[in-house]
Image 1 (cartoon, rainbow, N blue to C red):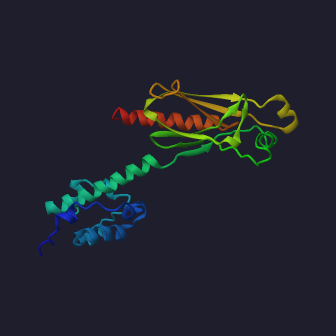
Image 2 (image 1 turned 90 degrees about the vertical axis):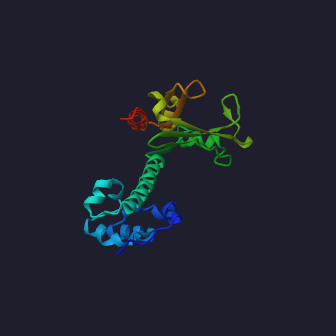
Image 3 (image 1 turned 90 degrees about the horizontal axis):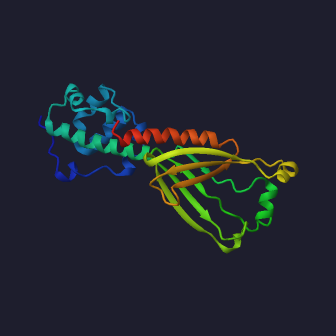
Amino acid sequence: MSAPYLSMSTIFNPPKPTEVQDYHTWDAPKLAEFFRNKGLGQYSDTLIKHKITGPLAPLLSDNDLKDMGINVIGDRLMFRHYIQQLSRHDRFNSRVKPIWEGEERLFYSECDKGCSTCCGFCPIDPSTYKLTASHLRVNKVQHPRCGPIILCCFGATYISNNIDLSKVDDVDVTGNPAPCMQRMCCCASGKDIVEVESRFNNNDGKVFLKLRQGDGEQVTNLILNQVEEAQKMDRGY
């Protein structure tokens, strides 16, 4: 029996993101259903027989499709087309999936927080940090100041800085202990300042992450690991 005719609109109509957002959880019957909806239903039993699941689909090569008995060139091209769509979706998810998220440590202690925010009536928003496979995103909150005093009731400006990890030159961490009086009276802990340096970044090429004491070393290692991976990808390794 000849294969069903597939219109050009069917061939070049990419799957919607909602169609494939959970494809990595698909078993073989679910994957077969996806291809059946794309006009390749005659191969449903083949996919199930060879135990091709959602996570395995992007690994299929043209030779694999031949070994599975898919001999019609047009059908193999269709499979490759949708497999590439799944691979593209997988790469996108890998790029945007957060590896670590954190926020700025503003105060050394609850007493410090209470004094600086008028017991919470004038809250101060912290900057937020998000590390993905390829970028470090810093959403910085800048409050107006009068000397060292934050004027939290006068609003704030928000600046988003996306740092390409393949361009990062150095990552260091420095411990910043709490003031002596706060340590004695409030048992305050210090801060870890993570310094990320890049020649391609504005503001003197440096970004500072202010974290809880003890978190800096772990976050530094995470960033350095992703910097190494991003630079390998940038060099084509």
